[in-house]
Length: 515
Image 1 (cartoon, rainbow, N blue to C red):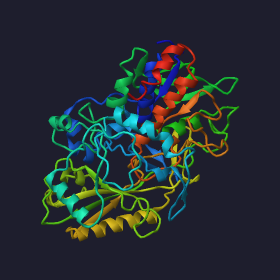
Image 2: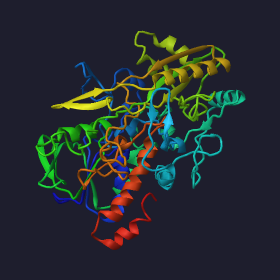
Image 3: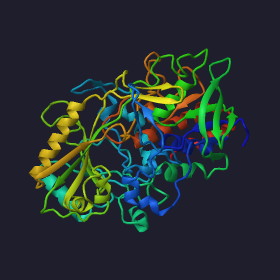
Image 4: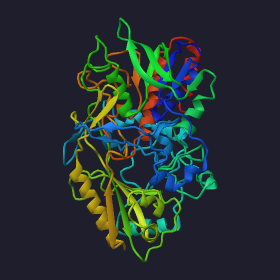
């Protein structure tokens, strides 16, 4: 690999790995720089005390609030990014999410293109990530041009019982679209997959579903433990140099195209740190919007407990309901999505309740059903990522919290009505990255958005940002599939518009992207 590859991709999460998969067949010389390493296949991967009580996998880093108070953010740096720990939920945004939505607190703005533009790429991403699911049960589900290739992950008996109770109340529980080979996952150990690391055990994450496709091509190389320090411009407006640190050594590459996919926080921080005399506010930031409009879903765990209910489920996370997604059910503004959490054991719960004895927590979790309530965080320019030297400062100003509290209250009422007299809830705070997004958003107006609708910087023609930072809205569903779908769309655009050499292979690649 030369020091001047055609394309450098910074980060191997869902955005970076999927855009690499989409570009691999072009024959372009592609270097992927990943700050972390692969997750090793070790027993600790399924040790719930190590994961949830001792924080074995949490990075040893500190971010700061605007007040100067530090906190451990819980973002992961490894091949595959945060998707190695995700719940493998690969939902589409609803069609309505691409338009203007009025919320209790603020407005969720329209995307620069409608759902129909991204729909074919959703289908391609679903095939790449081998999504298991079914259509027809969720009235908010948008149009699908292709059905899921695999049937949904089955409910375990206690979960099927709860689904039936919700249906009897007139709700519409529907199978979660999941990127998961259940038999492979359970063959390693009988645990849930949500928040558990995946060492190629059956989850279809950025590494196993997308990066694996890219690395089948000899023109694609992954370099691990390579943390990018800055981007530099030359006399023009292009990114000319990528500087990174590996094993204490400072290295540089000069690619034709730079694709930044380090995550919503780290991508914006890198652009801000890379400021120079010609770009004093940071790169890609003539709009002064880089780092702004940070969003993190309003999310809570809601646990229904009944001594008459016995939960013998292993993994649990198989259905959701969106009855309050487009409205509050009474004609008012939207509230959000409700989906099952991965099965919470006494070992998991003790991580949040360290003073409680495990025998008591075992009794509670053995008679509980665990849900995740999620509401949209509306973009706010004062909710932002900033930098002070090497420090990352996160000034998160939650929006739409009242709507989330209303969703939690509705869920609690529903659970009581179907036989769970005790219902507990706990919100997630900034230490839990609940789908961070929005810091380098796409838009049609360069004065208001750093990126065009194909994720290209308005300021630097050879810079693309392809991670959750490009999302103009957070919606109220898991964003991974939307990031992957846009990544394939961007890869197709780069292949057809930016890569000029080897024209015939490029023409052929258009039909291969996402296959």
